[in-house]
Image (cartoon, rainbow, N blue to C red):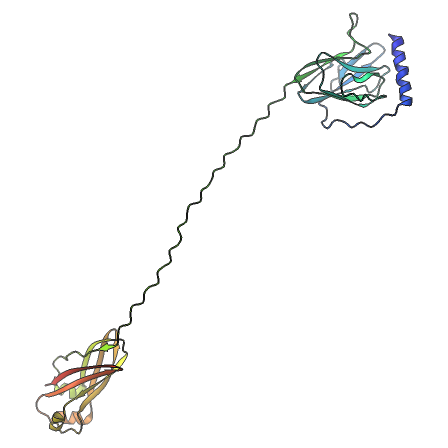
Length: 294
């Protein structure tokens, strides 16, 4: 055994001198655990790098994760070979000779200190490994270890959140407000009501007040007149007893007809009633009313 170890050491040293070590890219994912090979004059062993005991040569990971294997320092040669279940992929990243084959063993043969690499385990299970230079025998446990791969946690499938569909409500189109139809403008009109108990003395003193309905006129002139016969009887030079200008307000025409000074004088001397006619003129509108002053 010692002779074989020395021979392998010499081969490895010779390879160091003649083989150029290419740069090897590491796997994208960082290893979850690290197993290191160690040796001493008394024994050789694998050890979980995160533990302080050389008796701990087992690591536990999840399916799909990686374990790093390395031989950082020592005075022997080692590698990692699997017995039974094999890892999905093994990549050597350092050593005197880089193994291009991405399968175990890692490295392809036992090498001196300085080699490094990692293996990926996709399937759950227990993976047993050993060193080909120091295998277990009936008389020696050799260099062995295990990688326990647990099932990866199930990734919950995201449930789509139902999106409430908002159906826009139909908005009633505003109905145009119908334009108000302007009331037709009534034709101009006017009339005179019969005065209540008109008296000669009252007319001579303050005039005669007349009213009547009206539409579409603003003002009008009223003339109170008599016939020529009555004017002669009253000894008047004309037939007009009085005039007045009235206004149409809120549909009612109102006017006060006042006598002239000559008419006042004549009426004071007259005894009896006086038959007269009140005539309203407002633009094209003409209205008359018979009036008897008593």
